[in-house]
Image 1 (cartoon, rainbow, N blue to C red):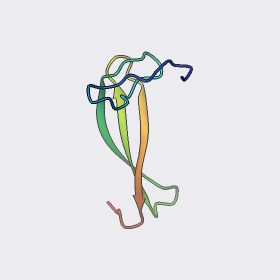
Image 2 (cartoon, rainbow, N blue to C red):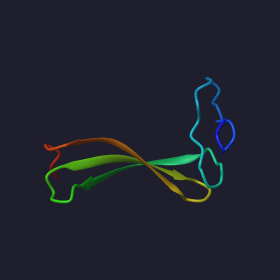
Image 3 (cartoon, one colour):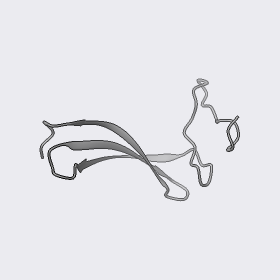
Length: 69
């Protein structure tokens, strides 16, 4: 058990994402891309925005030297 209590589960029994600030479980999914410091690589991230308090959780997808915009 974590300090936040037991993780909420969806109907399928899988763990469900929960906001660390307000414990909301409804999120808006956004995609983001950020270049590295010198611009050689591009980092893709998934941003989960809490629909209640607007807290943003960042999830790192992958990076590639060939992702040039």
